[in-house]
Length: 435
Image (cartoon, rainbow, N blue to C red):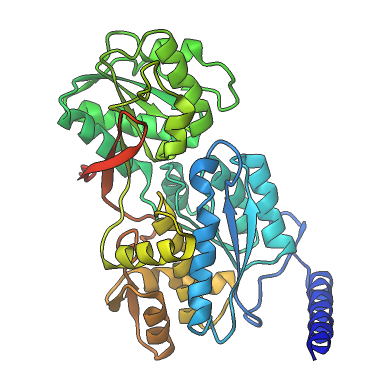
C-alpha cells in the first residue's frame, strides 16, 4: 500500500508539473508597453502559492536567517486551520544574498518560473528596490517586513507600484525621527553621521539630519556626509571622518559585515573614547557585536551604544513568542513579528478576495489590515471570520499594521543598548515626532 501511494503521488506530481509548464507555454501574453512577452496573471484555481525572499547569506544574514522560518511558521499555522480558499498554502523560499542583482534574479524565478501569487520580502531596501520592478511587472503582490527606505513612499505616491507594494515595518522617515529624538533625549547637541551608500543609508541620513536639526541639534558633517561603499573591505578613512570634530555621538546607519569593519577601524584609531554610537535595526543582532569584537579586557568595543528597532507589542506578540519558542526552541528575534504579519496578511487578503491572484490580494490587503472590521489577533480566528462573511481588522504581532495608500505603517520603536559582554537589551521605547 505504501508503494502504491508513492507511485500515485509521483504520477500526480508529474501531471501537475506538466500542466504548469503547459500553462506557461500556451498562456504567455504580450505587454502593451514594450511588446516583450510576460507571464499572464496567476489564476485563482489551485492553492495559494507564496514566495519568500530574504538574506540568509550576505551582509544581513545575521538578522535575515530567521525570516523565512517565520514565514513558514505562518503558512503552517494557517494550513493547520483549513488553508486559504479551501486549499493548503505553499511557500517557495529564495535567498537574496543581501545583493540587489541576486534579489532581482530570485524574484524573476519566483514570479516567472515558480509562478507565485505574492512574495513576503525582502529585508534590504536595495534588494527590494531591484526585486519590486519584477514583482509589479508580473502582478505579484510584495510585502516587506523590513525594507524601510523612504524612497518606497515617494515612488508609491508617484503611482509606480500600482498597489503591489506594502510593508509591515514603518519607513525610515519615522525611525530617523525616533533616533533623532533619542539623541536629543540623551542630551546630545552635536553629532556626526556615517551611512552605507544605498537607498537605506542615504534616505535615513537625510531624514535624521532634518529631524535632529529641527530639534535644536547640529549635525557636524551635514555638508560633507560620510557614505561608505557597500563593497568596501577597508574603511579607515570613513571612520576617521565620521568620528572627527569632537562629536558627542555618531549616528551610524550600517549593515552588519561592513559596519563591523568601520567600527573596528574607529576603535583601532582611538576615535571612540567618550563618543556614543547610535545604531539602527540593520545591526540589531548579537552576531553583529561579536563581529565588531572586544577590547583586551573582554568588554565589547561598542559597549554603551544605543539603537532603535521597530517595536512589537500586544496580545498577538505574546502568542507568537510562545509559538516561536515551542517551534524553534529559541528566543524571538528582530523582524520575526513583522515577517509573520506580512505573511499572514497576504493569506487573509486572498481569503477575503476569494481569489489567490496577485491582483485580488492587492485589492483586499488594506481591507483586512485596517478599517472598521472586527479587531482580531489570532490568524486562524481571523480566517474563520472571513469565511463567515465578516469584515476584519487584523491586529498584528508587530503592531496594528494599518497599511495606508502608500503601503506604509506607523509604529513605535524599541530603544536597545549594547551591554559590556556584547549582549543586547531593550531599555526603553520612543515614538517618532510626526508633524
